[in-house]
Image (cartoon, helix red, strand yellow):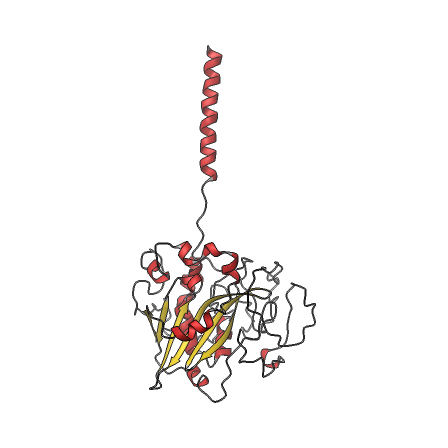
Length: 355
């Protein structure tokens, strides 16, 4: 009788242990929100401070500013953001794409610039629908007329097309590791010019012009992970703006369409985007100038990307700007030690070519 009781007790204990073990294996961590990694108000801010689209691309990828925190190919290095442009009438659609691998890109946002019959220029920064949901739009009101406007409406204008691609980057650029989301929100506030206003809008002004481009979107990440779209990640919300109004997170100007970012503690003067930010949480080496950094291996702790590029299919293909000394079939990154101004970009490739 005693033996039977012991056997029964052991059986019950074993069953309970199995149940608890099974419950433990079903616990999974939630993925972070992808759109948290690129603040479109910071994009709007540096666009207004740029001289032209080449300068805008440079500011997007400045290692000392670290505007982006996107790591879509998950190699623990923030993706390079290239800029391409398409023009339809008086509308300029400036597309920002993450470079994910060899011939693999993903649209993340567009800057849409239009001019009406009274020569009034309007700018909208629009998050890609896959990343941010539909109609996630900010309209910046600049405190001065941006210099970049003068570059758009000139005779014989050629749309800008980035000459950089996977493994072939400007000499000032090098990789950095992404922040945690909490640190990125704290960091990005100092790169949003508080003299400008960033108004949320539900309406896209360049809808017709964008529709002509939409069929050529780069969708390398979207094709690989169709279930990670904003609509799948947040089925109860239309876009990132609606999501932010319900989240209890620390972010800049979260609940107000017209609210300007708060001034960082101890700093009452807005920072110039082009300057080196020595107090950035992640700085480069002390003697390093951000515009002259050698690509890739600028510090002893940095190593080139060795991960295999993703094989997602895309219609986007980088243009060839200089003769390549490496094997075309090799996926290993190529190191380029010349400045962009000395690259052999021909007039036919420097603009006008559309995908």
